[in-house]
Length: 472
Image (cartoon, rainbow, N blue to C red):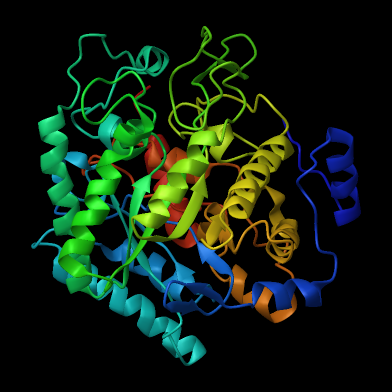
């Protein structure tokens, strides 16, 4: 179903009133949009040159050995020339077994030189375009894909509803406390390698249902890493402490955090619409989820945990929601689902409102910790108007773009020059990028992902090949 039919910002504002989305507002004046988003942001001791970020967007286009490949380099060159001053490098595995696909980046001695070259090239082209790259912050996101690792799932605990969706038997082994303790050292080693590669910042990926995010929701896990909030944050505390113990304050520590997980959804066979897997309450699963009504957030633990993360050294937080594997409409409000997935179970503006509501509440609860906002792409040409309002009102520090950066990598340049984006360039959230990400029928085990509608030169043929190779 098509939702975005608004010809003017006024029409979109009328829709927000009709739907009662009380956290979605817009700055009307393009000059004010430009000025607000051009503001520098202080992150620890580093001043980021403007208030626009590119989220960590995986291309699934690295080599089998974990290095960036031709399309990876091309993507980051486009990001580097785009004008954003916070360029968040994509999920990079700390272990080979923790990769979500066989072409995910993986940092180790064998890939270190190539990853360093990718960072150098990104900053080089930014300097070519803008005369200076000293105010660009580029965190490298470190990850272990946990339940979504290939070829073997590694789960933190048994959420029966997530298990049901992915047909995980109840006796499937859970990663042990001793294995987690050893994994902590892999994160520390990856951070050291990132420093050697030239990165001034690293990010712990605690979102999208991956291992660290699943640990935060492991209320029913026994042992040192489950149960109480103190135990569920133990892995993060230990990793941050060990990194600081080795590196002191040389590295800026960041985190992308899923502040609300939600419940798993499936596609209704009759209607095609997403419906939640039937559940009972209390619902003792996930992070930021109300146990009495898991469709709603409960940010009590989230706010407490963020306070601890600050004490442990986190200086920049990227606020995320949901899990793309089992409720993609939560994290990425969309117009059209990827092939075979469910249609939106709610108006996408309600999803945008959820993003703004939760991120705004967290940013105001911790005003001294700069946060990056998510959920803007569905607003298309009006995303910058909403972002300027949120930044100006104290609801967030950075306007973050993900899918739109794949479709329109120069969006920041246009916003900073004119206060508006080009209507013919913005992402339409029709999810072709996600479709490609889910296609595995490739000689390398994974098709690369990008934006076929707006980057046809490369991805037009790739999506044709993916569709042709898909088993019937």
